[in-house]
Length: 612
Image (tube, rainbow, N blue to C red; front, side):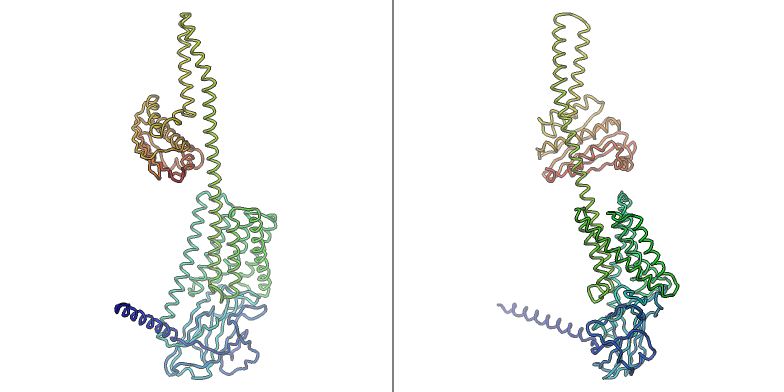
């Protein structure tokens, strides 16, 4: 090992030591408050004081988050006695990393801060922030070295019934309260806000992109799937939920009843989801499913009405039972679809399972993405459903392509068989008739025999053209450039048109199927230019390489509106259908550029390596 190598190793070691020291200093910017956390449901004026009776308070060991219980208040208090391992003569800051909904924070009997408003049960109209990070400044001398008391009043739910809580849970998370110097904690606070807002913006952007994509697919002939409209409805529900929570609820934008939109989108989503699966796979009679959907909507309306009363507890339980039934029934439908081997059923099952799992994870907010569990779960659900549709569309395209290939092959086989029958049957009779007429003309000089011979000659020529049109005999004898050249000569003899052919074909086409299809494409395109476009000058360019074949055909005809013709082609009324079908069967691409009275330019590209 050289001296320079030793010097480089020394620099690397110094760098890593500095890096580790920096991490240690960052970790020591704040000290986590340690002690025994206690919690009590309800709200009493003296619970913020230093000395109270805590004998009936619940000791929290494993988790600090709380779940709303039946007939319990929608508020509660945390209390913690702690020692301050900081310089109490200097200003300090109290940082709470994970605190959901409204709060009041008291230290040593004095209020140091709070966010939001404490609402009555089942009250939705006001905005109540769900910020996860709070930083409250403590002046010098506010803390004592020992036996400080922290009391935090929190919102536990939106209603006094089991499970009636906001997504993401309520209360605190273990290890989320710490002390530190304000000038160190404020940058962390700003960084957290920027990071959280960026994540929310990305999730919302993905949700909005999904809605726009579904609208685009609905405009492009996917409205034939009835369930697609229910997918759009569920996407809009989740988008409203995300927007209301992220941009109004968490960030406390006033002037908008975010809580109302927030709750309505969640209350409607189970019914919309079950209708999506039911409209695909059916099951119970529509009368029953519509009746249950109506009951769910009525219970949701009862919860959202600005009227107080205990009836809302039973509306909540009734809605919750229907929501659970809807999700279980949707899962049963998709499992039956898997048993029937429906295309896309596995992706739909995965989507539904991920969404249900996100609902279950939301009960335990310490898991995975915290208050974003439903965000992420619903996003995965929506895109997995789209993936299932792409599976269906791909299978439909493959089946359609196989069917089209079969039809084209059957037509070509029938044409070949008819050509042989005409040649071996009527063609032989015509040849025999011509021979007999020639013999009669040698025996008897009758002017009618000359007329009959001319008619027989014309009939034989017409029959030969018909046989050649059904199955050109030259296809089996010539390569593709020579085949197209002979067809150009034949067309110029029949029609008043000049065809300029240019070829650049260093790679020969050995596949007879490709050769026949390209020949038919060329025939269809040029005949359309001559008959419908009334072209008198046509240019044909043929190029082959190891990877692809390019066929360009341009004319000076009447032209047409390419956009209108493309639409009529998709509806089945355009004369280029057979041409498009043959190009599609060869995995090719066709581009048509034309305007009224400005001719037509057609460019066809076929991937030879994939086709052959």
